Amino acid sequence: MKELLNYTLFEDDDYSIKVISIFKLILFLFVVFLVLKIIKKAIYKIDKIDIAKKYSLYSLVRYFIIFLSIILGLQLFGFNLSVLIAGSAALLVGVGLGLQYLFSDFMSGIILLIDSTIKVNDVIQIKDTVCIVKEINLRTTTVLTRDDKYIILPNTDLTRNQLINWTHSKHSSRFDVTVGVDYSSDVKRVMQLLKQAVDTHPAVLKTPASAVRFTDFGDSSLNFSVIFWSQELFRVETIKSEIRIKIFELFTENNISIPFPQRVLHHVNNPDNKS
Picture (cartoon, rainbow, N blue to C red):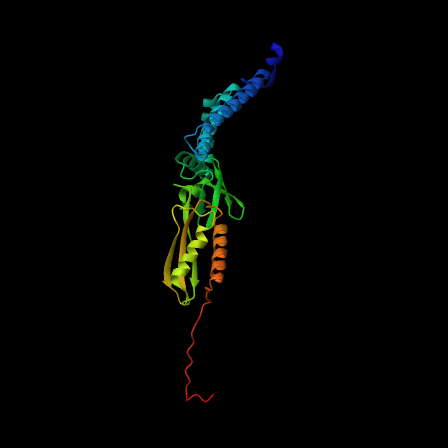
């Protein structure tokens, strides 16, 4: 058995790989896997931090342990890391210049995991795209858009560009629905119906309370805006659609019309024009 463990699989000058080195590496990887599993369970049992921060904390610990394991694993195989690094220093400089954007993405990933400005399950808006964060890795972040498409974003895009985090400080946000009615409409009755349409929707929060505003005298209509708060940030456009349907039903029942755009044309007869 001892002879089998000391059997040399590969040999080159002063370096050799033996069977026992393979067994040590397998045992080492098993221990690393077990340690990661124990750490994950311990972190996710903490009740004082939310699930997104647990994910960030575990990701940082996992990446650190993997990096440390690679170094220790190379040493188990007999690699002299100091000689390896010194011999490849010039190569690393050249590769580093070519991979500077990749390195920037890695650093941005570490920043995202540490400062928690963007966390898993956060609803963010990048330019005109609203999406929910599904996974944050060292180089990229995976998000899901409202039309159920997954987008892989380089982490640099999230740290360098301006974006909106709808769930940064709390899990509810303010939204509004606008509508215009005929000039002959009862303003107070319109405001009552708008508030009724919003308050009866199950996804609208009772606190803070909804509010209706008479916003402007339009060219063809009296314009109103109803403001409400909801925790359904990602699918809020569906909620707005359902509220608009309810508003239309209430307006129809109460004989309140939503006017078409109107223009008044004045025609002046010119007596000198014989055509």
